[in-house]
Length: 344
Image (cartoon, rainbow, N blue to C red):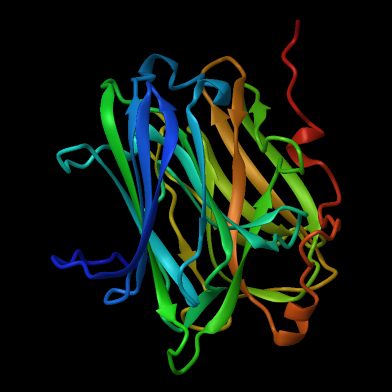
């Protein structure tokens, strides 16, 4: 279930700060600005312009090293709880540009670590297939004014047209800190078949259908309230299983076009009615990624991660790994242990 936001004609930013940063895009300056619209309870990030030459000829086999990447640090400007986001990409005249020019983006919170890996918390991720995501005001991700954040962007213009000036806008909806009744506090969980500190979370899949799995032991008890994910084209399924019983806890299948290109990755919400999906501390779970590669050649640099939102009790929240702690919940290397090597 999705909760699309309605566009309002009037914007009333009450707090704003901006920085001009070098984007290294054909010598152009990229403007990076964060504003707070307290009337709509949104933190708005706007960055651009970016020059994006067409990479349509390399759309199927483009490697990350060929894709422009940018990173921006900023300080979170409000106290409250994050509820979701929408994003848009537009040209200099305000005309919408296809989301197919984006490979992925993410926002990192440097004040908290991930549950399964000793990496900074990823509060949001989006790809070319990600729709608007908005949770009800009864739940939210705690964010404090002054938290150190980082926005990372990777572009991959697989459309046939060059883009002379792309402006990216991310509108993050939040609930104010004085909202009553207070929202149920939630935290993100990232379940990735290839992520490890110091390594890219990409891997190679062979021709035909293939599955990559990775197991982890849940560090705390929690309830999964919602899930989304990210794959590359010809990805057909993400699922979470109970490793002992084989029971499928949740399954997400992207919507594909006739060529196998991912058009949309659905968002599953489980905690709107009921408590969500129970995940128990000390129990082993398995994240599985499925690809069906029709190209006859290995697909390199693909991704597969299931991203969720979980609620935890105060007792379990106190057990959350602290920043700087080295604990890793994964019990194997997933895609990295089974990296496909084509015959020589």
